[in-house]
Length: 583
Image 1: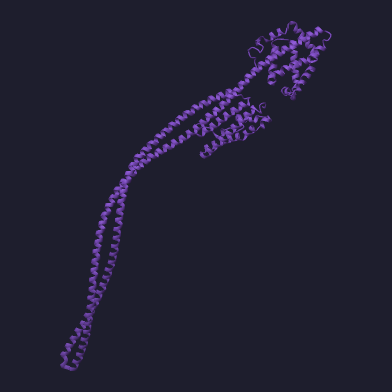
Image 2: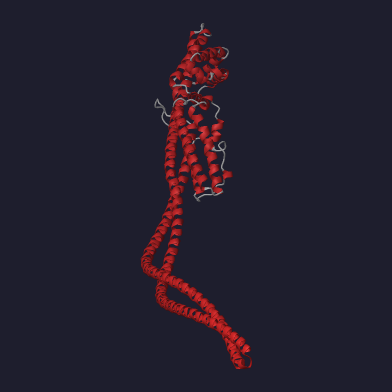
């Protein structure tokens, strides 16, 4: 770290510090030669001095860990300190010494050694050097004093330069730490802002998708309403036509009913005529029976006459010549009786034939009467049915007229509904357009937020990575939602697994067992895997058009993402507390 170009804690300008302190400690030209002489006296004893010095440091647990006493670094530190002491005493004040002191101060800052122990360590080192200086100059008090003064001036110059570098480095470290903390704080606030804004963005995406579906549904309803209006018009026209046809049918039925009534009257007349004919036939049949009785009498008379003629013929034959004339008369009487019998028989046959014909006519008349009766019953039923149908058709005609009137009213209402639905669909389209513009603005804001996040992100800071991982997961989830709502195109095969993202690479690279065993760190693993798996499953469902699976996948993604962010927040808190000095 570069030294800050500011005044030191002692009010000495940084660029003049070495010369000022050297002058104050009276490190004149002779001091350089004294420094070389001092190093010649100490060089052989310095390993033992450093052994004692670092042994004392190692006995302090708070110092041993920071100096790496348990990791075999003590020998390296001894060698470095040996070279530094040689450079300090052999070369004296100058830019090179100041640079070395700066590096030493920065190294102690990185090791986390406090100023108290830092200054105490200089005192202990000088304390361990004094016996060696005194022992080598017991016989020359002046030389001993000069060597001690040289040692004090060089040691204190080194201490002042190193402490100044330490202070400068500490100030820079403090500023840098505050900047890092500020960046982490800013990144944390930004992550929360991104989460909040993208929650709004995601809800807007869902809303836009729903509005688009509503708009499509509104367009479909509008089209259906227009078709409904046309159908109502057609039905109304059909109803009017049907009502007119019903009126015509009703008139035709009324005319038919009159005709049926006339037919019924005619059939009744036919029935009466048939009855009279039947009565006449009955009388004729009775007359035929009487004639048959007369014929029977005539046959009986003819038979008797024939018998008398036969007797007369016999008597005439007995009378001889005197009875010839009587015989002729008897023969003629017999002939007349025979003809009478034949005529009677012929008349009887004709009367029987007449009676058979009359019987057939009677049966026909009876059959006609039955048919006329049935016809009369049928016509009576038909009349009643036609009267009922006529009444019903009259009712239908009236109701069709009412329906036609209602449909005319519905036509106006449906027209208003169709126009309202069209306006709603237009408004939905306008809302979708505005939501799209708002989403575009938020996308631009996300881009700006990501640039800020990159500026504040420190790849070496676990806390910074936690906050960046939150932003990554929010943007990851947003891209999935944008894809399923038609605002982005991301294939399922392009989604990285949970080892390939920023969080996954960092997670897998952690080797510190304290961190790996911490509950908040362990809690990230499964939901992080689920986030990536749910993202792929959601996009696969989207590709095959399975809306139910898409919705389920988004729910699973959201739940797992919340768990990841909660685990990251818990881990970030742990880094501020129980894991503060870990990895």
